[in-house]
Length: 389
Image (cartoon, rainbow, N blue to C red; front, side):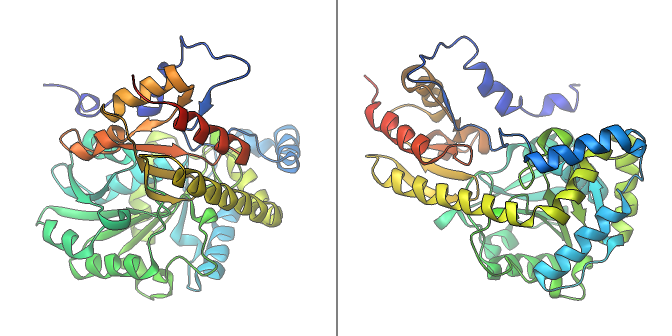
């Protein structure tokens, strides 16, 4: 019998990094890395200065903290979410985790037993798929069709007596698509009507292009009976290495989550939590400018892709463009070939779909948020000039 970890695939980003280990890139044409969404810049200087002060003078930064997170940060999130979504979120409905990936693993572990099923839209975020497989759960693919949007009616047809949860990611990873508020509400109502949990990953909420709240679920007084929301501070304040995420859910579920967190990490890193709190209180204007920059790069990416013969844009938003490529080879081969011939590293669609799904062979994910307009123009030029021999 194989181990649980053998039930899933190798980490895709680590695999892609190995493609460039022995590659040599010239100074006039360095590697264009559009493979990963994580910010490559450190936190802004004022936040780094505040973090240095924490490390030097706040001794609690080096100690264990409450398993479900610092009370002040939980309260700040609750108040911010109440304002931003126009609903009601209480501090005891918030937990802090060591990154959003841990929030997902903790939520699924608290909701599901071995053999249960979870509906996961495809193309999927690969770490979600990996955890479901390692937990011995049934990953039920929910196809995203026109506009890379899942269909609630199709989801309803896939629900069985073993289904425990439906997962949505918006803005989407890998597709970039912002799910319409009415679609999110339809999935919420489906989950509620069938006694399921809607797990809503909003890691990229800070870069949603809409001026209005992305959904109205928190305005429903009974939202805790159905909704679990996940969030990450990695993108908002560039705290990727400090592993700070959040979960919003009913207190009864968070009591079960607490068992998971205490066993795995005891608590999220204290410096990361304190930095997230400082950022929420002091970096609102800076974050707004970051959002504007990402949205500007999104427009540049959309415009660039319209100039590329044979490439077809399937979805774009937040950090990602999801595309069909023009090459007469599967995307996993094409991605390696682009490193060698164009000096471009992107991830193939095969990393975002089940092995038996042929659509992945035609698709690529481009993570453009770390590339400025000049870099996006260079990317388009290299792709335009690159054709298989």
